[in-house]
Length: 171
Image (tube, rainbow, N blue to C red; front, side, top):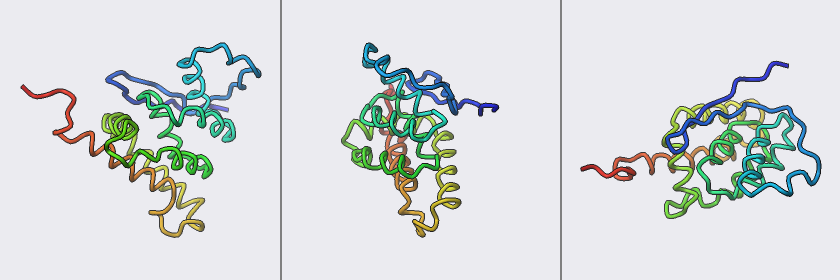
């Protein structure tokens, strides 16, 4: 099986290349217990790219509450995939995404404002999966969890890409 190409994003002005899918088995039980929290979070992020949707969902549970910029692309990429249960998990956990006063809104908004093409592709993928698999469940695409997430993410990105929100004051 030929793996799909990785995708790239920019996080805090640094390039980040993420595998499209990984096919490695998960580490044996207990092998992760000695990892420091950041290394465990990185491992969980990488396994959100696993070929098995159940593994992606299980690993996602461990990173959804992290408000680290480097976690955002791993979560956002899952919004453009076909597993409805994962979309429902993301929608349930990203409850602060719509509140401009929260850290979650700021972190997602800043990362997505810096990566408009990544957000656009994710939007197209979510719309495509709705049309192919979920149109019968959500006859109005606006209520499809992928669409509601995309709307929230777009709003956060717009909020953080406006000239008045610039990180660098003009002199």
